[in-house]
Length: 417
Image (tube, rainbow, N blue to C red; front, top):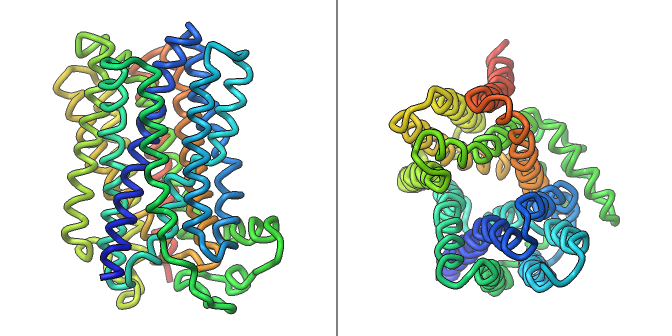
């Protein structure tokens, strides 16, 4: 019963925290526009709370890896993130806008706690034979949150105001802290064994007494494992493409669907399709990624799924560039069908390639890079859409395809004699 409760508590906390996180972005945009009075200032708040994740992720992961009770540290990070949102809300319109942006940047340092920080604790909540299904369920929480979060933000803002939407998102995130606090402690293993997929034992055995030493060791593991490095690059490329697509959504809604606000339907279509495919993978977890304890080729199969997801996303974005309401909705659905399995496969690779004593850093570093990739993609799409909306979508498609080719090169090398 303990393991079942731990998994249920894990999923409830992860889903709640991630729904609040997905809600916070749109809520901040609405609140920033309402209280600061400028769309550019509202965008600056969102950029500030996302871009700093690239610094916070590795540092937070290193601390999680050194903590005897990482769940308690995770609970503190989640609570501080929620508090940062509350402070940001209280300061908007009352303090100089530069102070609000700085608050957003500082809050964003803890953003990876809601994604990679949670996922890194999954092996402690479930036994090894249940990990594939739990991994798919974990990926499902991202899809569910991406569907529920923006809808909640819009609904609460419409009913109670934009400030209330930010407050509700902070409350949702804070409510996940007890579930994080109860996560199992780290097992006492003074000499961890190398991960099954690690190529260099020295990478996984590096342990120092300093946070900087742990940071260096984690980065060496990511760069030293071809499977992990290429899967990470593929996921970043996909996130850059997703950020570009998200930035195009209002224009697509205005030009194709009859209203800028209707563009949000496209994101909902993507989220629904991703949720459905993640649910299917949770129901049949071994049909796409056999247990690595039984088959050494599982990592290659998981890598193939990541590659397929990136390729399908590239095709969907290319479809979106052709225009037409039916084609556009189809493209959004196809992107979601790829997104769910791709995330599940990425998590599988991370779990299997990560040494136990560096798992937190590898997950949070990957999460921070993905968050930053999404932010950079959205930022790059701004000037590109002024040039050409179909051209922007084509660039996004090419970016996703490039990520697939990176992983494809690894797969080709893995089968060469």
